[in-house]
Length: 257
Image (cartoon, rainbow, N blue to C red):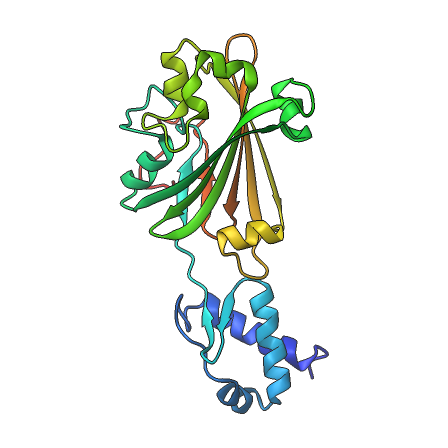
């Protein structure tokens, strides 16, 4: 006889159903009454098992509509090519990558002059609280919230590239714009981290319970100093990132990308 609490037995069985495809993404689970009959368990026990799966980000609930399997339409980002000026693209890297994947990009912008937070100040090598330009993007793929991107540019850079302070998108992308004004990004340093979302992040990205965020910090450098610090916050269940490093001629085109 199982020593597990009955609600965990219920959750384990339903989790196996999700893994083997019995219930596919977007499908509704049986009602609590039907599950009570299947597992010979009380409604409270069934409800506890379902809440456990919801906390893991596997299912979601709608008032009066029961539970459904969460959809995971993953977007894959090639971080090596992102912002690579030698890689052909018509506009900014995000819009180009999403469009090339056969998806529909959409983003909103906020631009402001703001005191530089400690995390960004350290990477930009400027004084804490000194003024920087913040360009904040809220990004969507097929109308689904996918990520936010907050880029800080040091105040001295505005004199070289005044369009950084203008509201709205820079059509050619900021990296190309800066290069056109003699401020070329010659390298970058990436940092990756994962954690649970803040309340604001959960709201902006429409994140359900149990879903973490992936934080991608890219600090870009000219030949002699840092020129920007970008923190992208991804929904952990809808994004995958890859890098291409070294000679990959032995890699098959059919291998996972």
